[in-house]
Length: 439
Image (cartoon, rainbow, N blue to C red; front, side, top):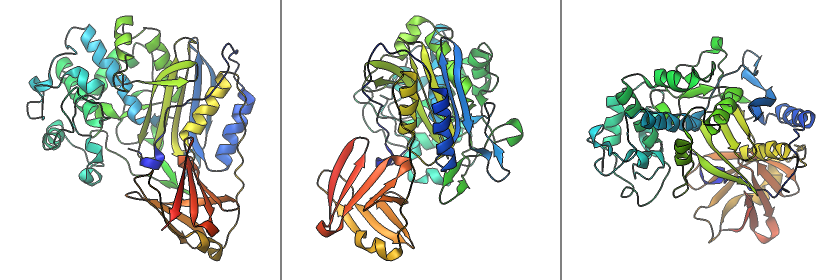
């Protein structure tokens, strides 16, 4: 999960209604070229309208070391977008009359806390109270190791509940791992086979499947993090997240899938309405994302160095999908640009000019900054000629100087503006601004 300063809030941007949906293809191409040239983004993008892909682009490398580029056929791990597939499969199971939303899960998992109170629906909309296993400290010790269902259930059974079922909602990957196991039990097939039979085969999604070890020969790609250069990231074993985050796909397949879902080509209208009913912030594998007077439904995903996002506007019959294997920029900014283009709104090509500073220049900013409005403090240090920031409980991150006393961390859309003589700093992110004082 993303730390506090990484949290991406749903996209809300004022646009005028009634505008034509003309995609600025050439300008979008220029936008992604600039991101690529400045090591901000590696990945693929697709926009679909009325069932037709009307824009597709790919930039960056699937394998940096071999200088192999991403293409429209490159397959990415899509992280938590897998949850939309899993929730769709659950609704297929309900339609097949092999599962009920209101049945409790104790028949499947007797050792899970509150199993006799938690329903399938509670798992789907994150109201189960089951703790999110990926936030446990020991997660980093085993996430790259193959584990059986029995081993994962033993881990889950040892966790205490966060709250009583159906009293609150809190995002938990554990919910969707359990849903994966339920699907396997009611169909007596592997999750990958169920996905194939129920979704990818009928929709002819040849590049979407349950992942395994990354296979470059199959047009899959590695994921990276930019730390002065693109550095390859560790690989989560897909037995760990299962239907919570193990699906592999392309941007065009994702766009085709969500278009078909909202055209009721996979599940019935009644099932789709159930999936899009928002309860305490969550639907079934979908969240509601307003773009001012337009409404979309979709999901984001993140696993290792992979990032993804997709959404669909039912009233306009238009959707988008983004898959990335290297991100050094805020996903939200890219999505806003895509939506600006979709709804014929002007957008800018970003500039990434920087200011060169010496180690001595950075001394005036070093210190610990805090304010009453934030539960964290920022420790500002330096490493040679680079200013570093570390929020309480988070990793240390490099900042880039782009103006007098102004630094930023593009990957989280965070801006730090210093006032050395006043011993103060402004922290800006997601439209919010906080003034902190040096202790």
